[in-house]
Length: 277
Image (tube, rainbow, N blue to C red):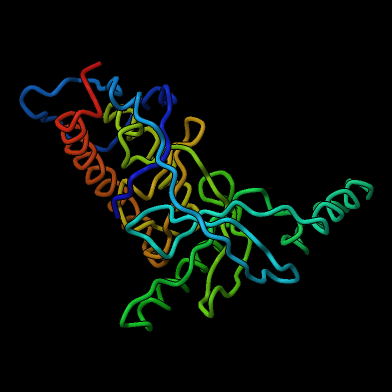
């Protein structure tokens, strides 16, 4: 699922040094005339951010009636909305009152009443529309299960999962807004394959440690946030792979993503967003 990022940056966060001992064989070929490294072109750096249209939305999340300004994160995914949550007097009261409690009690209050401690930004993801709603329901249920299994990785490898709700009569989940840079955007396409692999492998291994494999190897499902990758879109997660299968699919997923990354770099250079570094 390729998505166009709305974010423009003056620089791209540098990736950590690639791991020396990687058992995954990365593609060695390079198209004729393509450089070893890329950087954002002057034209891309000068491009003004695109401001998507917004609309005011309202929904109940647990005991709170939430109002927010919403915009589509991607034209390809109308069921995913970025939210700017409107200030709430009651939420401000909850926050202030909780700070007066003993330190040991504050995390418990936040866990029991997450709706009153939401950040200014969040993501609302509804069940996908489609003719076969049984399949769409299965995808949604799979993603909910994946977030449950991966709860220790929330805010580190995957977004925080705030909870479930209904939006316009449809099941939805409220997630952390990550920001950062999509690997499918020009801003995310300036790494070498070794740097890319050194970021991807820890993500896959972290998920595998909790019995989950992200089975949709797509660059748009990874975001670079503060020099680390975070994984999105867990609706295609698989829970039953053996250790050997996980190792096989880790290697094949990284190779697949690396090949697409090379092709994407060449495309962005051709259309003027990247240039030789």
